[in-house]
Amino acid sequence: MKIVVSASGANLEALVDPRFGRCPCYIFVDTDTGTFEAQQNAAAMAGGGAGIQAAQAVVQSRAQAVITGNVGPNAFQVFSAAGVPVYTARGMSVLQAVEAFKAGTLPSAGGATGPSHAGMGGGGGSGMGAGSPAAPVPSNDVAALKQEVAELRKSVAALLQKIDDSSK
Image 1: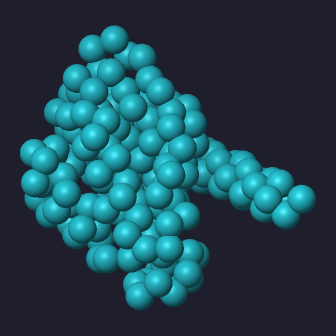
Image 2: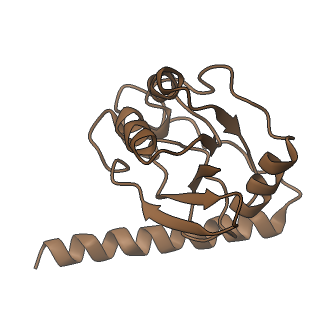
């Protein structure tokens, strides 16, 4: 079975990203073989409609299930219409989430788990990083917090490099 996980990085040790539409990348996992492929989220920097764009790309990839920290109403509607179930995972690595999925212990999202524009930080297009914080990681999981910081630093470095490259 082909599943997709919203991830903070491009490997199985990366944390499940709490944002679906604006996560840095998606990891596609074949649960039968254990093989995976990381893909950059092309919709992450969209001015608007990132959730819908990302959900449509996932549906077109023929993923049979989605694992994410949260999913907004528009993306959830795309998945619902396509018959693709959504599961939530928070504070765990992609590998842990895939294993929980295979064990049948991940909760299924019966609807949107976040408001529209939540990945933009509080709604209404107020800009990434403003407003409400991302879904919390359990405070007793220091290693997970350190890993999330390391992944965020890599993402920031990559974005700064893109800015530098485009201004040359």
